[in-house]
Length: 328
Image (cartoon, rainbow, N blue to C red; front, side, top):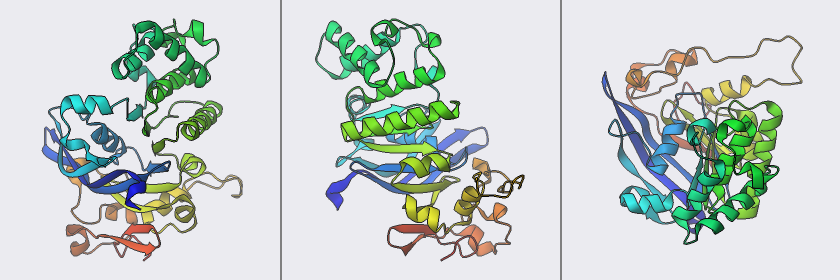
């Protein structure tokens, strides 16, 4: 139902000005995030996942980055039509974002307590003392031991896992309806990754938030997401429920990603599958099938020049309908 949709993105296209001219980073991206849902956005580095997140938050680098078309409806309002002040009220308050690298998201010369307090002071009509107490409480909620003393520490004094917990605390401080988590477990060891993902799931249930989880790790997707969008070269090439996608991948790129996951039931010392080639540069994109150069199949000119539309192959399962890259 339409009322169950929190975030609705239609025809989102983004371009960047480069030395080679203006290039397109996103090409007519469509997806929705439902109330209380966790949607995974997966793909290799350079596919446009983080650009999608920055577009939602209207944090594209200016003046080089520009949303050229589309709409981003959040709770019934188009974020692209909000004033700068209106968008500032949305960021952190209604939409929280967990950035990829905590050390880049945190100010190295301010204590974590001060940085958390600022979130409360910006969005709530409270005093400095109450904001500090709320910050300490939030640090406790994300599992940081001795939060009263940790609040006086600086980012460099914390481990990578602890810094990520601080960033999560900042993103969730005002109980946002939507949380965008951009590679939240990057550069963390496996044990800490599991702890961070479990923390996110626990807090999501407590707050009733929706989550847009951006990752290149299909193992993370399998553990946490209700639905998955597979992104390649600025486009969504497949979209389905997590169970359906893992059981019946239809696009060659999705099948390649799944086959590259290490498995315990494989014969020992079996070489992992890989996808030949690299994600194309933004100045080298086809108008038609963009996976063609890596598919191992010769595509006729018509498929390289004209984009194949998404086609529903099962209930709720959509795939880009290139006949040489998709099992339709």
